[in-house]
Image (tube, rainbow, N blue to C red):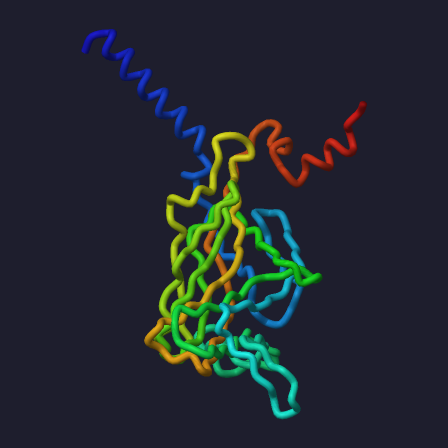
Amino acid sequence: MKYGSIKAVCLVVLAFIAVLSTYGDERTVDLTSIVLEDFGDVTTHEWKEGRRPRSFEFSWALAASKFATKSKDESGKEVSFPILQYVETWPIALFGYNRDGKDIKSLGVHGRFDRRGFNWIDLYPVNTDSTPFEIPMPGRVRYIDIWAWGANLDYFIEAYVRDYQGMVHTIRLGSLAYTGWKNLRVNIPSYISQSKRILPNLAQLHFVKFRIWTQPSEKVDNFYIYFKQFKILTDVFESTFDGDELADPDLLPQLWANGGTN
C-alpha cells in the first residue's frame, strides 16, 4: 500500500474516533429502572438521577373530550365524568396475594360518555396549585411501561412526552382490549432526540400525560380503568471531564449567584 493511501486511512480512522468521542454518552450504557409514579395516593415522588437525588411534589388530574357525561347523584349534586379515585387493588404479579399489612392502592378512572366515537380521557400530573406539571424523565429513556387493568373494551392508551426543543411526541402504549392487569411497555423511538452536540449533552425528555381513546364501535356509557406503577428503563451514564460541573444546568445558577461580580 502506498504511503498516501495509508495516510488517508489513518485520517478516516481518526475522524471516526472523533465522532465517537463527541457522541460517546449515547453509546456507553448504564441502564437503570426508575419508578416515576406508583399511583399510591401520595404527592411526594423521589428517585435518583444517576447519583443525584430528585424530589418532586405532584398529583394527578383528569380531563375529557366534550361528550363526557354530566349527571346528578341521589342528593341532586352534579357529577362530572371522568372521576379519579384511589382504590385498594393491585396487580398480583407485582405484589402477590398477601399485602403483608401494607396499604397498597391503585389509581382508578371511572369514565362515561353520552355518545360513542373517538372520545378521550387525559390523565396528567399537576402541581400543588393544580396547574399542569411535566415530569422530568432521568437519563436517556429507552422504555416506558405502566400496569393497566382493562375490561376487554376496545380502547387504547398513548403517552405524550416533550423533547428539549418543546415538541410533544405521541407514543402509543397499546390496546386496553384485554381482561385484568397487564404490563404495557413501549420503546422510545430513535427519532425523538435525547442528546445535543453542545453542552450539556443530555436533552432530557419530560412526561406530559397519558391519553385513553375509545373506538367508535365500542360502548362508552360506563367503564373503569386502573393504573399502577409507571416506570422507565433509562441510560443514566454521563461522561465526566475537567469542568463538567460548568455544564450542569442545576449547579450553574448557584455558581454564578455565589461567585459573580459586577
